[in-house]
Length: 273
Image (cartoon, rainbow, N blue to C red; front, side):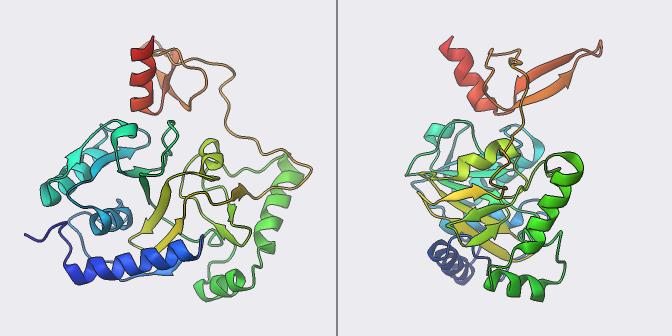
């Protein structure tokens, strides 16, 4: 069996696309997306990146919505382990490669780590310009007026943007980028991050990247504060943390309880108490 499932030519082509994406932060690079034993739309882009960069010395962590135990995370982790034999972990600090769907870990990442995002829709212009050829022209000209109009319309009608995830960011003062469907709470973690961040969309056949220590800021008007999700000082029922991203969970009596979305972070907080 080939190491990492993909053949060597496929991995070389993907790594070349990754290098180009790193050289031009926020720029969307096309690549020849391969068929994998999971359906497109279930993380094939991130999976192909992980399989192309992983080696025997790596330690892998896979999360879905912050959780190591979801169906998507477990199946992807088991598949990668079966074709590479690498070590796996549920601890963020021990992982060299973290593949994620829809969250950035609560624990700050380090220089020796790579965060690989599963991306459903790679181009942030898609909601305002569905034509892919025109999207390329707008990116080439750094013309993001349609995005600004969208933000302005939301602000004028509702007082703030209605975008709850995939909030547009500007990378290195040049390219507007889709950060994948992470919540606004996570958007500010992208800025000046020590880890390499790679984004893969298998169905759309696109790769883009944020190199370490790169400037990433959310698009916002100068006179409007960028607001993220808040939980009114609610605490995690399990570990007592009030500063993490929380999930609402209803018990059998209809009462709302709050729990940390990041299971590893919650475990660490609980152990420290």
